[in-house]
Length: 273
Image (cartoon, rainbow, N blue to C red; front, top):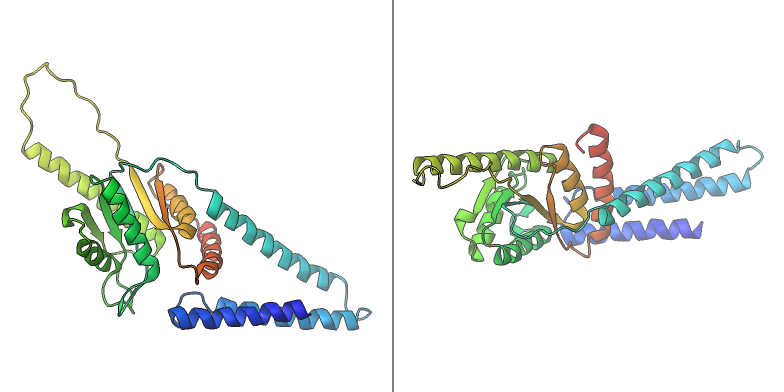
């Protein structure tokens, strides 16, 4: 009983930390109050069962314990996939890198988005030929679109505008990937049209035609989000996707892991990955 009460108290404390640190609008934060209530109810139920074993059928506590253990097992497996399921690959010299958006506040970008953008700047320093696709629409509580906010931050920190493509229609990871792929295809068509308008004149027989070089596309996001972004990209038309991860906010890290587990299960259930 005391362990369950302790877990319930810790869940409430963590919820208070989340809303104090990041605001009441932090997505999925209410889950910690749900966990607290569940622990209290589980503890009261277990205490009742111990006092009235003769009246309560055995299948009831067995079913409850089985459900709880199954949930914990599923969570453990998903988190193992999240942090070990993405094989390390050489991500240098990619043609395009999709930078996934995150919340924009009235007073500026969120800590998670800043970490992603700082990682993107570091990547461009080492791979100046890469084009960044900044993906994210404007939410109802956001002053500008996430893509616009990302552009302002990157340009302010020395990134050239011609290295940026804005995708401002997406409200989810699935839409981030789908619309970014369209933006990349449109950019490829534009470049092809420009090259046809000013072709290189060569003497016949001095060169051999080769097929178009396949483009290399990566996605840059927070470490806890990489696995889901990769699986969604493979499902939605970018099978050979490269992944680049950045660190996440240490205060919200546990919350992000729990939220990501729920998001992975939901996307798998509805066929997004």
